[in-house]
Length: 377
Image (cartoon, rainbow, N blue to C red; front, side, top):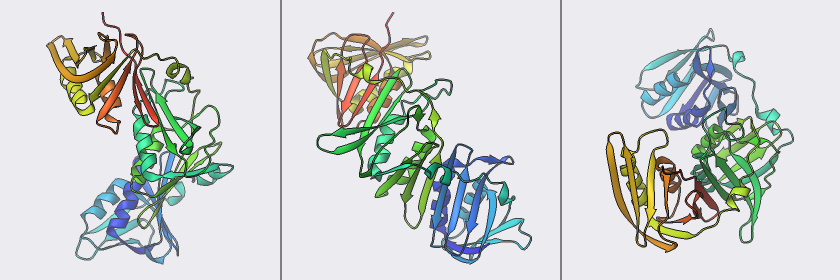
């Protein structure tokens, strides 16, 4: 291997694949593959795979190298701006990394044949393709994945459910839904081209969706392919193409519509999102225990928040407009409610309240967030 590539481009390729770095021989490795047309930077962790390819490298000799991802990234960052040279030594055991006026690094290269086989071909077989606006995809992911259960033993809750929906004005939509049993969030995005078709008992991994969202925020579109064996996303970036693949998380997602359709609203609270989030964080300092219980009470013109713990108590009033039945009082996990509010785009948010133990609903255009309240002793 012998090539030169602009430093910013190589760093972008390494950053785009950083979330899928897997341990191979005790180190987080990256595979560099150069041919006459392009350079490919690939990482894999056994569940997900990320590959960034670019035709902007000047390649004088084909070849492959498998080196430590962290060391390569740090070495490239330390070099002066300008072209970076990547050259395999004559024995094929080390990758020389340098640039004019900078240090010269030699990274040990493991056997590239030990890198995991690519997942792309198997996932692509029989898959159904669709595309979305990059910013919409990133926003929809952010509005849902915070509610995914982080407990791998929560069967059916440790991934994101995907389904096709329709809107009278926007047309075909894709809906992402997540829940951990104590909160639920769904959000929709318009399908630009193609169709969304997910097989039963298939959930999208949080790590995959987060990695795609990170690379597609500034992209015009993201192409998504859903197949029997997994899902993949392709994003056209500045001078490179990023492809991410993942296996499905197997699990039966709960019948969430039975929850959302059964909610009966008796009062509506309109409040400034930033004011309520700040208040929850302050009062929540005194909320001890696993659930960080904060008591919320409504009045005609305000929300009253209070919390008590072993070290003392706290209370605060937040200005609000309350319509409907006043005097609603219940407990809530301060962090869960703050998370749900933090994903809302509007500064003025609406809380739909029912009975004391009914979910707190935060509706938004093409989305809904629910937080289950807690019983107050």
